[in-house]
Length: 178
Image (cartoon, helix red, strand yellow):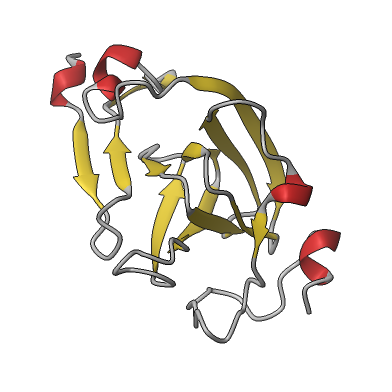
């Protein structure tokens, strides 16, 4: 398998967002794929970008997490188990795509990854019975935790996001935004 043959594309609405689709090798045992190879990804990232840590979130059906983000963190997100509806919103005030959003379906069949630049927020909704969401983070300095992040209501009328749900299970910090 050659990393140079992996598929890389841009978002259709948010062209600053990259989508990586790894080669997945399937056989009667299951599958195997490479989720990150610095040499390949560095061809598509800023020269000084350094991923510092990974997080995993196990989620039940009908859970919606987000919309969260900040102005310094790069996120490489994927679904390693199950199926999710990922939404990314451009919150950079000087961008021609300010407050525009794009949705991506991520699942454990194709393992696509979405690279979200700083200044964007993202959220995801669980489409399967359970799902495991993975995100790899890169940033300068200290990690920006929940209290310092940009947090938007999942159903903000100005954004008018087309979520595949009406009454999702929310985290307490997202419920407080109502």
